[in-house]
Amino acid sequence: MPETDRDAIQVAEAYQHCMTIARQHYENFPTASHLIHSDLRPAVAAIYAFARHADDLADEGSAPADMRLKQLDAWETLLERCEKNPHIDHVVFRALGDAIRSKNLPIEELYNLLIAFRMDVTLHAYSSKSELLFYCKHSANPVGRLMLALHGIQDAEAFRFSDRICTALQLINFWQDLSIDLPKGRCYLPAEWLSEHQISADQLLHAEVANEQFLPVFHQALSHTRAILLQGIALLPRLPMRLRIQIAATIHAGLLILYRLNQLDQPLTQRISITKHDWLTLALPILRDSLFPTRAVKRSQHDA
Image (cartoon, rainbow, N blue to C red; front, top):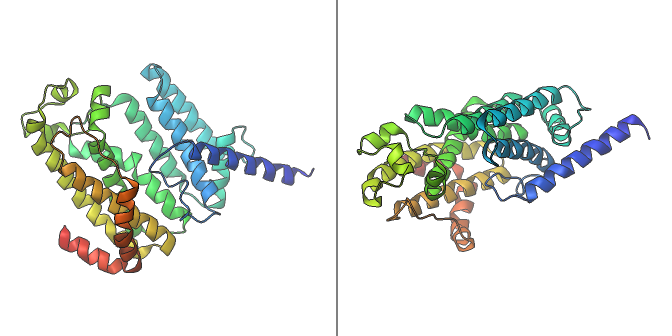
């Protein structure tokens, strides 16, 4: 068999491996969406497999922090090699390297993800809003930028609006998962917000705060997050239809979760999620904003 044919088979097998990883996990990451063109799905799966394993290195198991950081360093070394070496001896990076080269992906966004994963190891509370947004810049925004790059969108304004959506989604995930993260010793609410309401991160982590005392800072976080998400709606007119539908769906789901969170009486112990019935009720507004994105932008500016 000619070497070129053998290489093509190995790359195809590597992509299939990444697709299997993507299908085995439920995430907000758009790996399995049928709205993604079929020729782009393997590249999305390669990005997902890279991020999924790095996330596991940072968060899973009982390895000490220094060992996790060394494992992330090794993962970064493979990333450095895969960009120029099509024969790299690692199945995930064989697929990822091909995606980087064939789809002209901005590799710096993959390095940014690794910065966030290292922060997951070393930082479990945040002193300021700017520190929290720095985390989102590296944990969430690269995903949106990589998706835009896959669709051939490279302009700075699109990146800026995408960053707003991705940052808001990351924050929504934090506020949605308080009942999970706090018992694990993670507090994503900035100390500067908490101190305004005479609360400390240590009090939250040790379950020493009543829900009634916590509600004002929680509502502040939700309001701040909603404002960020509304700013991202301006991305919709810049997207091709299939991607626009997916992003419109993501935005409406985020707004619904924020609304539901705002109704909670006990956000420290309750958690909400989107149901199949919710998606049915969202279908019409998603279609409306996909067909008339400029109107969606005007409404968002009015609602902000």
